[in-house]
Image (cartoon, rainbow over all chains, first blue to last red; front, top):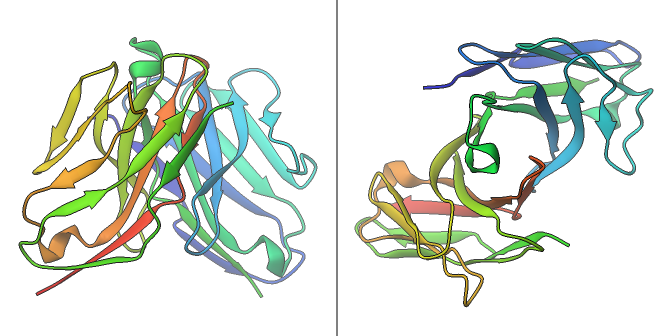
Length: 119
Length: 111
């Protein structure tokens, strides 16, 4: 089945560091990928929609200069947390929808997530 | 607007007990409905889905029926196992791709 690979799975770094998270669709093309953030024991919050070849669409309240998204190809989107601080510590999950057909009936395929810890 | 309301947890059941996790939704159009499962420390996995009214999604003994008249998509399993312990998310999607998730229900099954 469709697989989304997210890397790295865990990052621990010092405050002020920038961290890049990669999201790859391994066996399908995805013109759109999604980035979510999950706080402990809470649901997923959509941060932004990543569009191949164009600017990402950010949800209200998400700082686009803080969370840089690049979707340079049909199989890769990256999220860069710039100058990370302890409050950015969270579980970040990407997802992609197989554009092969089915429209909204196609489920999203999720990566395994990245646990980011900023010291 | 679109939203998903899920039964609050946590839910603790004994092995082989019957499980129901309630989910209701609000949508402006004709959404597809999904249940995702998240095991500890992992990402989300699709458990089952239904794309139109009266459809029943099923997988691994779990079932959910898309009820348009009650705007519900309750998750059920007749006999839970310890390995079913996880967090379950109800979600909807309409054309336009964005998903809306419920807050998740944590299930713990004890032997």
